[in-house]
Length: 528
Image 1 (cartoon, rainbow, N blue to C red):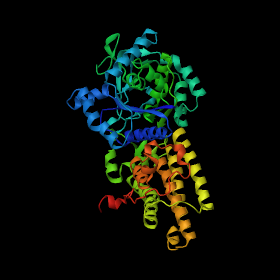
Image 2 (image 1 turned 180 degrees about the vertical axis):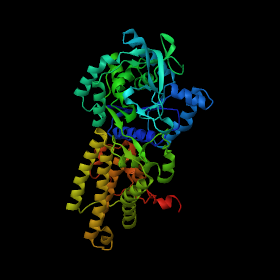
Image 3 (image 1 turned 30 degrees about the horizontal axis):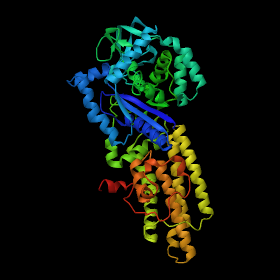
């Protein structure tokens, strides 16, 4: 059985999660669910990054210790939200866990023993928000309250000038090897704009990386020098290895590592596409298959973040639109890898047009007609014609294309649009065939056509339930049950993408029930 390893970033616990965090995590979850439906053995990892100066300062500002702060945020904010959004991660790693910290020390000790780490001094601008030294050319000039100061271009807050004695990783020695890898594996960094950015950065020449801090102690101690803690990003990146058994469970590690895809935010691209592969090269470990960076999620033209005061709680939207619609909307509305804007009005319009009208209404009509005209027993198709043949062929194309777009290309938007194009074909098929008119004709020929039309529509919906379950698991399960597929074909989770295109899977005489509306109209949801 093919294995598939997908990760999200591990998220800083300096605050509760917002839409941007959820966007990345839902994308990874859809990918993990899709590959499970391919029949692959999936390992899906997420977690939290709990060390570093930013966490320490946040905890101090809230009058608690950093471990207490991290424990509170993880148990009260992060893990409950992933449960709420139906995230199916196989593991949740925290960088304060011993299974991680011990392995991090071993990894860094190995590099030190090999001569890849040396002691030196460094002075330069540092962004605590990024936990990163910045190059002077990256900084922007402050305005207003920050006039006369240099700002981090991401957080738009003043940088601090730090001067420390640190340990350094010889990152500069890996530039040529990195460029050779990018050249040999053009899909290693996606999208292409992100790849171009990284290639340009590496070609300009890499500086050795400071991998320790000595002005605070909230971190993993450097094993040979307790006066230093390991740089938070070295600590954090290693979670992808420690979580799957690095130096602890060789069988698990060999079976799982490296990741097939790291799904990350654009702001942490260089860490993943430069520092992480260089660390792996230094240790003689295989590199991940792909670094996939989603774009900025914008609200009112501003990147989604707490520091820019544009953070919105995912629950603010799920309470109105529902969890499935929430999972669907961002992947459908924004091309993954590109920047995209969120607006309440756009969400409302797409929900009404595509979910409530195109999809939800179709499911209601089909199940209602089977219930009304055939007593809830799915009729056998005995009068297939050109219209049915065309729909069969279209379904095969839909399954192949959506599988390739979502499962291979991470083109979530393209895959969803392909599926919904087919849903509109089903609607068009019913409009053309007019089963409600045939139902008034008691002739054998009319009954045979009516039976065939309704079977064709129900069987098409069976396939849609499979294709949409990674994106909208709750409503897909409702539809699956309503079609009688749970009783006749087994659990939805046991179905396979490849079988979605096999026509005739839903047995005639399956019990079809008119279940609850999949996507209630928003005025009904809000009670107005």
